[in-house]
Length: 179
View 1 (cartoon, rainbow, N blue to C red):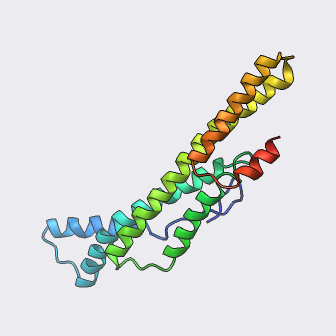
View 2: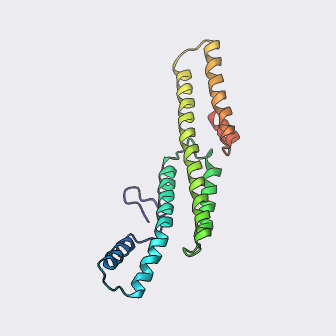
View 3: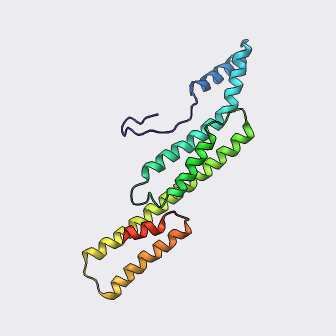
């Protein structure tokens, strides 16, 4: 699907929301004592079984799309491995069938975990990189004594050291570009 404003492609779950209406209407007919054709009942039960999975997948994809839109040039190299993990997981699920419920539930949980990990890393890195750039801007603006400059450089080094705890990718390349 293409987003209208940004003209970017966006991944969505191919699940028709009108199927939920079908399920609700069939349920209402049954409560009213009306006979419902077996094919419609069967389709309604199928939708009822698939709906929670579709909803979970949609939520994970919405979070993924939102997070990827927040990835800018400052952090793109650092989050590359986390993003690749999500993309590999998405790729693995493309041909998955709705009727393999146990397999599908495992897949949905794995995808949600990886998307949430990506979201956490993007949020943390965005904050930390902004801190680094603010410190660097303060170095450029003011004339600093050796002690002040050393403190600011130490603060930057501490933040960069914390990046290794986040298991970021391309840290050495990013640091070289930061210099």
